Length: 130
Length: 130
DNA sequence: CATAGGCATCGACGAGTGTCGATGTATCGA
DNA sequence: TCGATACATCGACACTCGTCGATGCCTATG
Image (cartoon, rainbow over all chains, first blue to last red; front, side, top):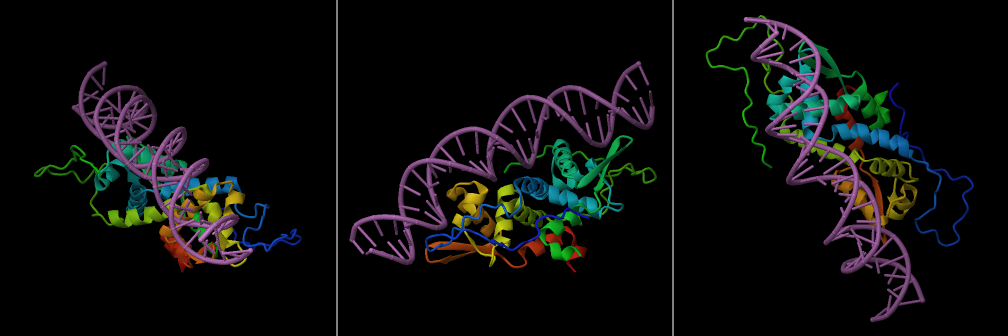
């Protein structure tokens, strides 16, 4: 039940008005047959959360953590980043729906949202998700 | 790229007995089994090519094209972008290994690199790519 | 040749991003 | 109650990114 987006469809123009000229390559297919602008923007927002090496490493550390839970102080050192920067990256990934935050006592534990990455992967290659 | 990082003070004394009963949360005991910095950077570069709505729509249009081939003039209109901008996006995706460019006569045809998206999807959810 | 069209490249500009230090907030312990 | 700790937020800075108009290159055609 991930996002059913970007199913590759063939272009079918049933009653397309013919191009008078030789119709070189610019077929005026005005029918928005592709991703809608809104869908593309939502998808891009999630990929943008993955488009940073430090965030990818955070994801890797979190997913390889003993119980798939990590706190900020576990990340600051291996990434060589300041604590505010790590918090910033974590916030971006929480807002992108990739991580969840659970505060226990003084510490904040981050864990993967189950299925979030699979959903994105299914968007990239729909055939691999079945 | 200056990243000095003044002093990552870690609770790590040379002869201090670390209490292992409580073990608050900062226990980086398992050593660096995550993504290396170089791998993360290479991966992020490919996701960065997907982190733009117009590029996602370009991918969608190209993949839904009759023979998975599209020229620049086919893209400029449905995206409401100028021709230089479309060329710029296409160049980014070619350099990211997502598209290939083939020039036939005056026109340049772009098509998907087979397996490129699947490979990225496999990175996100390895179990789904089997 | 000369001309026209498709496309890439260049330079510039505004907006967005990653990083930092400083500061604020909440929780636990002495 | 006070101090220490873990984390979030804020403001600032340099850098990157997306977009455009102008221009140059290449190919086909007359």
